Image (cartoon, rainbow, N blue to C red; front, top):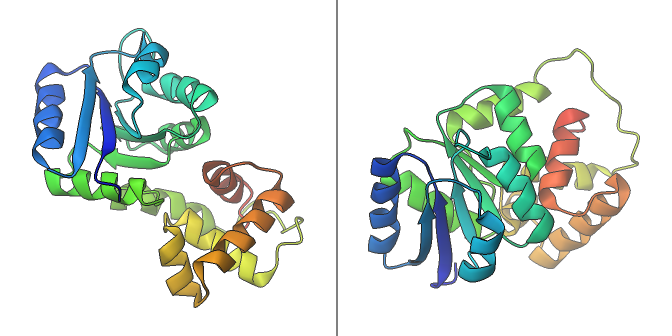
Length: 213
C-alpha cells in the first residue's frame, strides 16, 4: 500500500465520525483528507480532497450512501468506496456492490479490522466482514435458479473469477492459482471482455447474480 493513501469519511453520527477521524489520523500509514456528515457535496469534496478510499455510511440524510457511491463511481471510477454500516440485509449488500462499492464492513468491526480493510482495499482487494462474505457466498451454495456459464469462460478464468468474488487481491489470486500476477491480469482482461464489463466490481456482481462460479 502506498503510504499516502488518502481517506475520506462520510458518516452522520458525530461521535463515530470523530472516532474514525482520529483512527485514520493516528495510523501513520494513511492520510486523512476530510470527514462529512452527509453526501450533498460529495462530488465537489472529491474534486478538492482527491481521496483514494472513502468510508461510506449507508443511512444518511439527503442522499444515501448507496446513491452517493453511484455518483462517485460515475465521476471518479478510480476512487475505492468501502461501506461501513449496520445493515446486513442482502439487498443492501448487493445494492451497494452494484453501485460500485469495493468493500463492505459492519460498524461493529474493530479499529484494527477497519484499518486492515483500508490497507487491503488500497492493495486491490475487496474486504468484507465475515458475515457479509457469508451472505455473498450463499448465492453459490443454493442450487435453485442456477444459470449456466454462457460466456465461454475457461476453467482457469472461472477459478480467477471465484477468487475475485472472494475479495482476493491480484497477488492472492496469483498465489491461490499458482500463476504470475501478469497472468492474473491476462485472465482478468479476458473475463472482462467475455462478461462485457469494465471493472472488478461489475464482474463480481455479474458472477453473483448469474451464479457463474
